Length: 121
Length: 107
Image 1: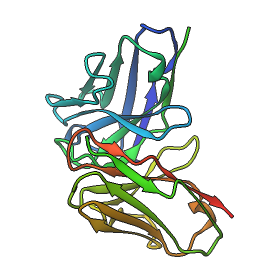
Image 2: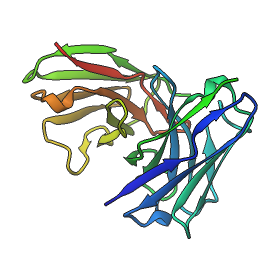
Image 3: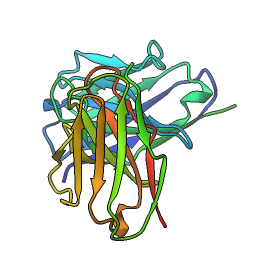
């Protein structure tokens, strides 16, 4: 069964950091780009970042550029999102999503259940 | 950035109704459009890609159409499991962007 399982969310103070993880199973992880998409309370979905299958090509939304880093460990079938300098507006449920393509087609066919990040003092 | 605008924001319908959701792009995206279904506390579900291609396993009552800047998602006969929020998403160019969502609720 194809599955994505996120972890690492929690409560963090403004300016703090969190490392989100996404464990993948049931498909050839290295063959697909991966992404993070978030949903703030009461809001819609917002794409955050994508990484190619090899991990050498990354893209970020302007709202997180310079603060967030995306990476992957293809030997461990795990995707990461390092979030630094967190702000209240980063509060959201963060979803891990599998892209349909290797370089990043942009269509996401498998999603995890999400991990909640709350930025508050 | 390409802006995606969905209408309506909320749609009240009954089981068995045909429903249609519209999604408009601020510039042409060819047919690089996906649709997702999202229920509270659940993982979003991929329904349609390339504007009109049905993902494997998605019921045939769902269909998509359009190209350029105007797109629609239709559900031919609404089922109890279909009450959810639906999002369109363009993947023509970065940053990928979603519509604000259309909540389909029970009338």
